[in-house]
Image (cartoon, rainbow, N blue to C red; front, side, top):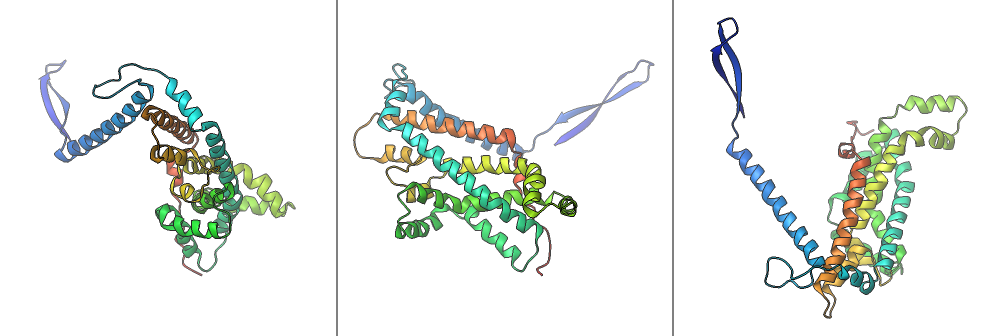
Length: 297
């Protein structure tokens, strides 16, 4: 809350100088909100910082800081948990999910943006469900079906499971981009003799490239961080980094906590890099899907 008070003094011509003086008065509710936000980020910084320090510590028991520092735990984590293979599988799954999601989602978004048909709003609602619902709620029956057909436990099962929330995400992200393009551009291209394929490849694709890039980066981040669906459908040779991190923490046996922390730092660093890239190319306000207020035909 900003209040203005008047200060009176001698002006240049002897007249009283009245100048507004601003005083900022914060409401108690604002102090409470800022205090809660600062408290949350301090706790988050403390958790991340403790894991980072532990990953470099030699021994850390009953003191504020470790007895010494070393980087050997990263080498042990890389070897013990076969992180090269795990990261390779993570990239394979992520790139396959991104490619298939764009291949399916972009044409579907075009149809939803350009055509009116009965049940259109219901279809939008169906696409929202895998995004809004917790993945575990539909992940268990989905994994049951994939195991029944022999797909789960392999790379194909992990990819198919991650497509369930990724394709609707691409559709809901791309639909506003397509709606912003004037349909008369496509009509003009058709009048000049271009077919549907030529219109899509040579007219729409260059205009939709920013939206496709935004969708691809966001699906990539989502797939790398997806735990539930990957955990339910992954096998020994199809684990992504987040699932391998979980198994390293819960598996039987004695292992150094520092090596697990080193693996967690690697995963966090990968996610931070992906998020920075995403925010570099994606405006978060573009992710709000704009649904036209149209009556059902």
